[in-house]
Image (cartoon, rainbow, N blue to C red; front, top):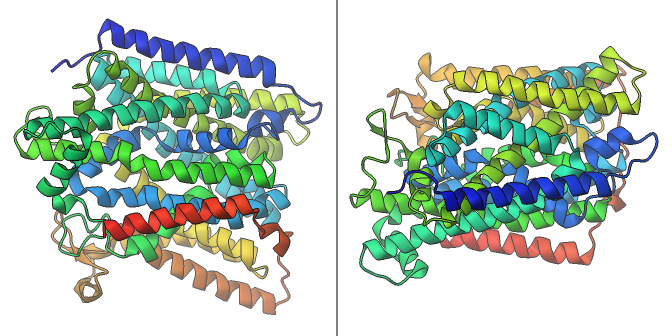
Length: 561
């Protein structure tokens, strides 16, 4: 096995770097036309300049990173196709966001999530969440993306982890400093490399399976062999006796907590919605629909290689390569496969992985800069800040946040948890409360600010409570309803992660309704949003596309039930 990149691979990677950097510079100097008095919107939102295909590509480029390539492939190795529910459910979620969420944001001229909270509730709720989101984005998201990306790049190239972190961070800063317009258009190239390189790795993995078992029939036969040799890895809905049930608890992925994960991520997340907030409704919806179609493709790129690696590993291959600290580490599946690629193709896949990491870092850093500049700096430090000052503060914020990520990342022990699970666990402590606050804020005009505060703080506390409850209370009574199973690590009954989120979300909704009703009776009149039923109307092309995405998703779940 060739463990490191050859000269030809580095040439392919250099071509990718030159293309992205050159195109980014061209966009910055040729398309970056600023209108007096709107510099901050031009910089942070690329207002009115991103096309639907740029919005869709940027959504996917910002979403897909090392935690998908490495973490999801590792989960594919460990639990199989069931992990693809995060991707396929996201396709349906994006349709919901395009229909119901984006019109509300655009109608009310919302540019940041804290701005929405300030407009709907009050400045206290907005500032608490602005500070919280900044901490979450820097300490959890930015650091995990940087660390996992550098870890993967280091394992493939043989370059030191520290140098890889610095190099990726610098590359991301260069892209991010150009503003959302540069990010949006360069993401189109990033997604091209991401998909092309990802498909190349999948092709190799399936072909390798076919050749190893004497078929020689190519990718279709390789896929058939995988379904025969690892049939347990091709079920979307896990049974309670499955060792991975705590991660993906059966039907909950269809009717429970998975909806909270996805709707909060795709609809209430600055990092994601920012791509569409600077466009008109039709363009934004078409871009989100394009992203939904790409989402359906992602499991082929990030999950199937992990399953292929499992089939080959189970038959005796990669026994040493999959080891880390004496134990088999599923997260090594994707790097192991990359190291098998032929010269040149390996460089392409290496570029795809780097593209995913850099694009995701750039998107996250831009969102950090947007929230800090518009919702913290302008509100607290300099209320009279000019448009140019806001842009400059944003650029400084980008550099500072990336430096913090480089400093913090090596100390988080992300690799011990598994990258994908690390991010899901720590964002999951707050997702139910945030989503409850947003959904009632959207569609129930009587929701009060104190109710929102309850969801913000109470949601986090209840999540902690349910997390550590098994250590103090016997939860066996919940096992009959499949809401608790014995943990393979602790030996205690535990509530699956997604079920915990569902419980906390329901508690937050009930608590918010009670608090709001009490305050309404006392004469408290909440601030409302401008909502018109007409803004939810869809044009025929979008309806057809949305129905196709929905049909394909239902068909996939039916086939792999």
